[in-house]
Image (cartoon, rainbow over all chains, first blue to last red):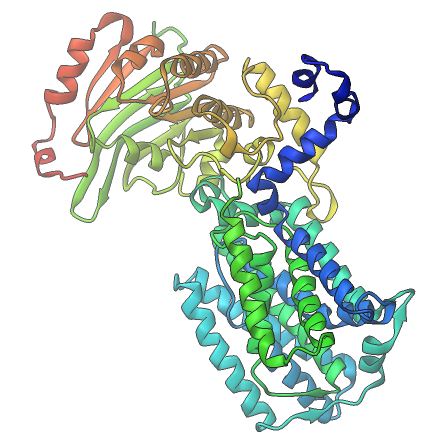
Length: 337
Length: 260
């Protein structure tokens, strides 16, 4: 498109550049457009990070390390998808980490009590769904701010985990969980495959179902949604239930990986789930977002921590790095169209 | 005149609505005939918004009767109104900015296949057909996000959304409020076409110029009561303005109304 301006003043010396395809001009314009960087922040940042770490460390891009990044990110990916569902309705789930903890502890308690692993996992999932549904009911029907409700649930769920476990970790030795964390489906470890499956399902639900459209409408224009007959309250209850379910799946994955159910605060996981969502370009005001973005955000945060560890940077620096990345990328989002 | 006249599609008989101590509407009668554009005018707080929200099922009337095709009906939920074929185009909350044109037109009534998976193709096709049928030509792609549309385009989408459902009554709340001259004209033409297609149209407006351009009949509300019901070709702006500001109230209690 920009070619004609050049063609009007043909000079011999310019022959070579003027024959350059139009896409270079377009690419130059794109690169100078802040909105482009804003829309693709997380992908650009992920690529930059991979290039930087790959040049600083020989190990970073080896198959083994890439696999360990994927495995380490699988829990965060699942949590970020749950958080995305809530944030896309202009809410936030601060209890996600605690729901993971209490679900995991319920799994351990059921397993230690001699129930089969299937029953234990079902109870774990039921716990997450119950906590999430309570969040949703209080937010939607009780009309209390999401921030306060889920902050309360954060404390309740963590406390419940302490009560059930009596404050002690429970060892969970089980073949199914061991396979989940060490076995492979083709090139993908089972836990990575599970996270990928959740991501694909999340994408389909958000962009290709009625529920997904209603979710985005609830977040972006609640009044218009209500006037169009969308049951806004039910959508809200559903997203908190989904978030709780994702917390429970995260709980199963964590229990499998650690080989124990621990009643510890999963504050880092909670903060990182919000960070992944923000990095992924999901608007905190609701109505705008994707699944791919937060998944890339979760990968980015995990790769960042992995890379810093490989470079022998003290782990005390890691939270600082994570926080800075989140703040800088949030600043870049401001340039979004 | 009275020979075999069809009953009005929508008839309100003595409808009232209170909010606590405030009487927002007092015993209002209103008929909407097929093919007729009726303008509902009145000052701020006259009860226009209350009336359309009650008809739409957002907050039902306290008293009085609503008849549809001559049959008494109860409208207590937006879905009841939609099921009857009553569609409302709200002034500011008509569309979800973050969704595209097709998503907006089908919001709450999406066509879907198994497991709630959307039938995008068929929705896109009918959205385009509706636009063509209504001669809305200014819109480009039906897949663009509504936030990027002009005011006139947005109103056109909102109106098209309302008539896509074999609706029989379309209520428009200040459809030209924020529009420029050319876009206002375009939307008013669209409103006229709805009447010509046999729908009953209720146009709520502040702008008497707009009202006289498209309406067949003008109903005037003042302090929650209907104070005039005039044929547009047999009245004048002067007469309508007098009714709005000083129309005679049947019920003196109207003076204590503070419907802000």
